[in-house]
View 1 (cartoon, one colour):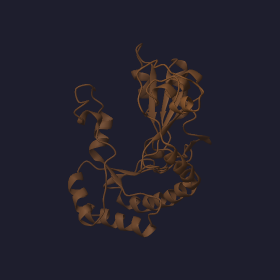
View 2 (view 1 turned 45 degrees about the vertical axis):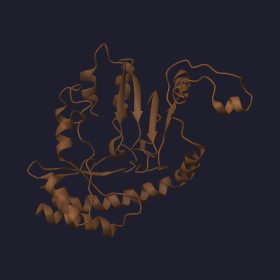
View 3 (view 1 turned 180 degrees about the vertical axis):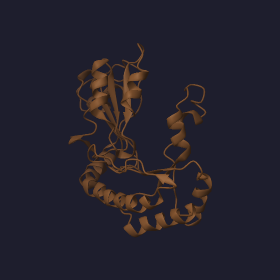
Length: 268
């Protein structure tokens, strides 16, 4: 997210700024934190792509008033399903604890242990508790995270090297990123206007290579198409972005296989 664009869109109704460290690359946190302080806005940090990432030596997820992570099966730290919320604010912490458990003031475990006989429901809540099995799995995955992210980094370096020869047909976001340590969650490229993305996806699929799109613009979804105004930059990106395969057990030879297929169908 562009800090200048954030500042331009602040109105008296603005309560908070929510940023996403897309693909595992940190936003410009110095500028964004400064904007939030000057305008007295809360900062919500979405770290779904950035397990283990940092910004100028400081871990992502420690800048916001509240931060959220995803541990879904396709994330750098995966437990199958679930996530985590973190905050330094005692009141936000209390509210999150209530919301994750039906808005109840006392958990079932505490009642079972005899710490309380009854409970109150103080606000509408949800059943958002991650279970003990997934939490235990998450601790094991956490120990493996630095090595897995380092493997991703080596693969992305190879992608950068190979994709530099295709500059006429695509650009590589974050090619010269220097704000900290990324997590290399996905490998996005931005295709030139003349490239037929749908045809390219199909041709690479015929080569046995699955690609993805991260993400369709919010206006393309039925639930939001009449609720969001124009966002020309994100809409352009959503129409031309292509995500290439990337996972920590991938090999350099497999990166080359992807790049050879892409190069062939781009006509380089």
